[in-house]
Length: 240
Image 1 (cartoon, rainbow, N blue to C red):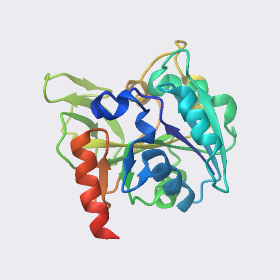
Image 2: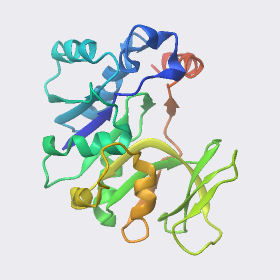
Image 3: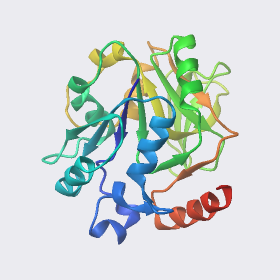
């Protein structure tokens, strides 16, 4: 099984920690966020991992070269241009096995979600993409019908709403930064090099099966800010 870790971001919410290192190398409970992500993937049977890099790219290359995990870890280099999530995935296509799904996670996500169960749900549902979601407070929500099929997006701060189907009473879920994509929709990527993945999923949802996978009972942290890291550390210390 293969996976990609989105680790190229600038980590602006983690400043000043990211003034001297990339977000992926910020530590939580004595391990870097990249280590947490890699170990989560290995625990769930992933044997081929792609990591995209941009911010402090040379530092990331050196760090990854010295990792000692019994899996293949390849780099998708965005040193010259940060490609956003969709563009980053598109840029890494050449590194993937085109015959099996790809697990994707943001490097700043800390969770005990069962990726194996999520993958099985993706396969049995015959989905083109499966997005891990949960009920939590957020300013941005994905909108799903009763079958957890993606039907829209909502920003509660700006009031902006986008529907991919006839307006209805859809349920709000927050995206957890973990998703699975089937290679059969690689050829549906837009022509541009830089683009975010969520709007692309919304565009695809009108003609493809983009579904949610609810994981409400798992612990989950977005460790993308100094405050959230402190919260995650306090929790993880107590569960060990």
